[in-house]
Length: 420
RNA sequence: GGUGAGGUGGGUGAGAGGCCGAAACCAACAGUUUGCUAAACUGUCGUACGGGUCAAACUGUACCGAGGGUUCGAAUCCCUCCCUCACCGCCA
Image 1 (tube, rainbow, N blue to C red):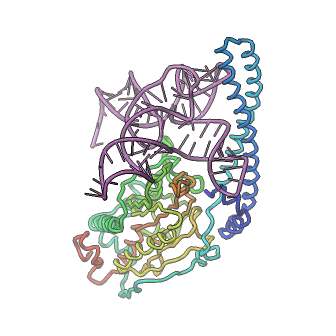
Image 2 (cartoon, chains in turn brown, blue):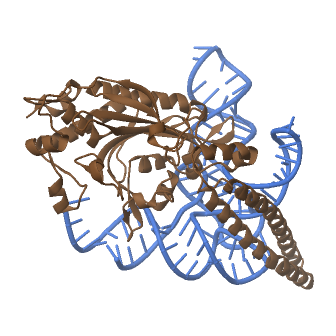
Image 3 (tube, chains in turn purple, green):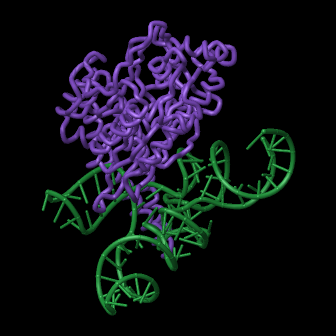
């Protein structure tokens, strides 16, 4: 959620930046500001009435003590009048505040100045590439066929148990999964993140805090009886650790493994073959809550962290700086990581690292004391990393005639060097 | 799920219609003392939204789990809900 103060001080800049994110309802800025004025004037009037009432109430106390009953009764009548008006104003004030909040919540975060112009993924800027494109032998297979041959995971079995998009990992496929999780977590812990195991369902307040509600309601599975949402990413429960907190020390660094649940309504075709897009997947997430002056430095640090892992895994990857139109609702700057899927001959997104600046903090009321002044923190998060497409790329890129070669860094976790 | 007890500032915890934004203690912070550390002493020590100001000072309102209600006046009384703890039941 944008800070009202930003709109107040620079409404035209806000509008211009909202435009860069292809946000249509730019006039909301003026509507919010109009409500803001109305809110303030209403509060002034209301506070004044309440102050009078408080004063009279005190006076009545004194009169009663002095035994002056009649005068007290007179004062009571005065209060009754004031109260009638203040009740009305109170209602108005609450209504205005609610409306203002409702509009503010509709506005996406403003893009950072370095965000490239553009609307579609084609406009994303390739920051750099790494690794080398593998040369596959003639009989190279896409990962879903490799998986079938080696019995690593089974999507049809998942259909029986749950439905499409819920893979069942088996044998060495399961072991590989667990190994990647441990490996990613250990990398994060080495980088100073504290591991947490969060709840895999969150309440409405948490889903709102990180920006999933109300914007992405349809993306999440909803356990309606209890009002909980299955987490689409560990970002949600983990970032909400600092909701409603005034932090004494910054930065706060958390990492977490969790399964992620996404409804992915409307996806189809080659996008959803194999592990390309599933409803439940595993991911290790890194989250930082930092001083506002440090957040872009930290963003680069997080990008390097992810990049380091991809290098160790020997994957061919590229880093994209997302354009205004392709960025998520709450992000000010996002880097996406894509790995080359050699058999499918396409790039697969495996990580997204974003700086939300105060967008989430403002919703969560996460603050710290900067020279005695309260300030909102900046929050960042990134996948480090999401498993399914990493697995897809590893299987495809590392296939040889004798089997799938496991990257050296992973072997101490898997206990095997070749999947065959 | 049942019964009982509770939810008060960073923590412990008092307050039981007006003197309460709330005692006291601890923690934290600043200072004094000290060769250093410790101790002792002094002071500061909630948040939000307004007003005010260059900025402060200062000032209004609200907030004692959440939402309603009673009352001139509610942390305090009443109702509903949520949560925590204890015991019982069920159970990995």
